[in-house]
Image (cartoon, rainbow, N blue to C red; front, side, top):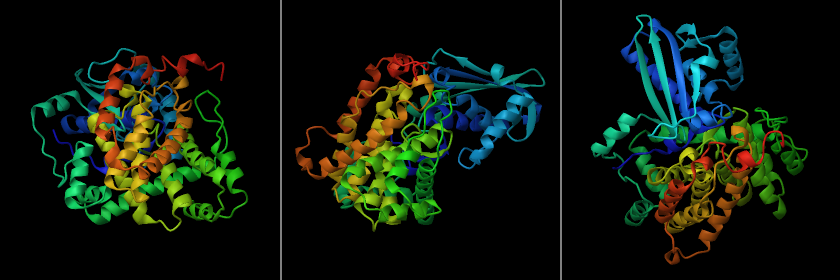
Length: 475
């Protein structure tokens, strides 16, 4: 089955802290509202209940799944909602015990009763949730969704239908495996980013591609900027102190700027000593994931929990490797990263609830390594090798968030993923790709086998690893 996955499917703008546990359930609530509007009179609804299952239940509180569901049912859009409005909307629902369903009708809503945390798992996927609407005539309607990682939401019946029907991708260069991508590059004598761009042009005008890619980058840049200029303690109860602010101050000293773009140019002018390079990369990654942990706006890349890796590596290229780089290189980087992420999604998973943290930090590191490698002059073979090297050294990485929060060890893991990505790109550039012993497709297959063999307690359940080795009292 050929599946068309756009760069804009892999790089989504949304609200933290989790793409599978926050953005996905939020989007599922939107889809449920659309189903109701299509087939029912929304004004006849008297109550709505939400059942969370599996990983959505086990770590839902720490991942703000309950808040995301309420915001989605309220008709809010995670891509555009003013971040400062979120707290007020949630507090209003809790204080009034009612929700403004779809921004159309107010109905009673007791969040402690109407959002049910069921620890059992549904058979189709670890992240399941069911919405039920009750009507004045005493009938009801239920709909079940699965948040499969990266903000992607599916229904089981649709997936089963797809298995029976051969779906033809409309891309001029349909890609499921890395070998297919490499074959197109060789046949067409094009870079990976050029192949991806041709595919994107088959779906939307070039002006829209340019605008949306730059909107993604500007969101990433703003996120890093906010993170580097925000002090305090992250929410959730672990009392984790933000570190990007102090690290940034120590690195940049006294400077003069007033917005993210001026900040970028100021860093470019800063004389960066060799030993500071890793500190800058770590600072950028920390900044993004601290914003994510505070329910800020980030870009899923490919997930919220791993959203700091790609911005940090792209920023590294702009402020360390190439001060003349601009929009052309930014778009090139994002297109390569998005394509590599889509190959992982098709061949394995980008859901920590299915594959552990290798599916998040590992995939994001591979995406960033490949994109950086192309910008630094790597051939398509070397670009794919960079992705393979990055993932190879994340295999088996577990997802064990303390307290169910996307904070420890998640925030630091983004710094590790970014640094590994840079190293992987450098190694690939110094290697003859013809001598590669492990292909990207093989490492993707291995990742999926590892995911299936991994004990469920290491898959975003907070029932194993650091999540139980360290309790909240110790923190």
